[in-house]
Image 1 (cartoon, helix red, strand yellow):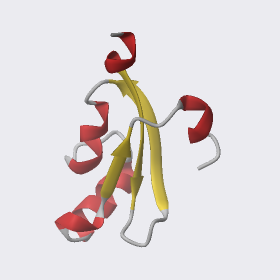
Image 2: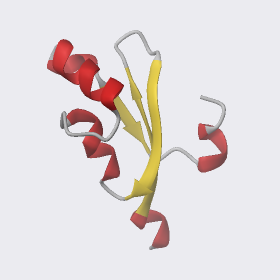
Image 3: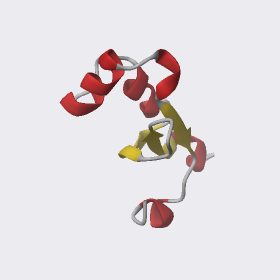
Image 4: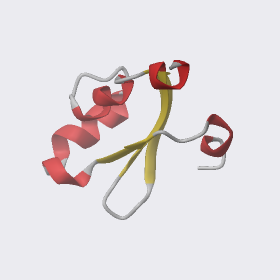
Length: 68
């Protein structure tokens, strides 16, 4: 299905503060927890916090993600 090829995702800190909202091909959210993101601030957060402090939720509707 086409919806399985595309995702909208949000990376949060443990307090629930959104750090990054992204969209792209299925699996694109993985860059948030790789330390190899194109986003320097997201990489900095990844390397300066514990592994479980970055939470990624996916499968948002594009229309909802603009309100986050």
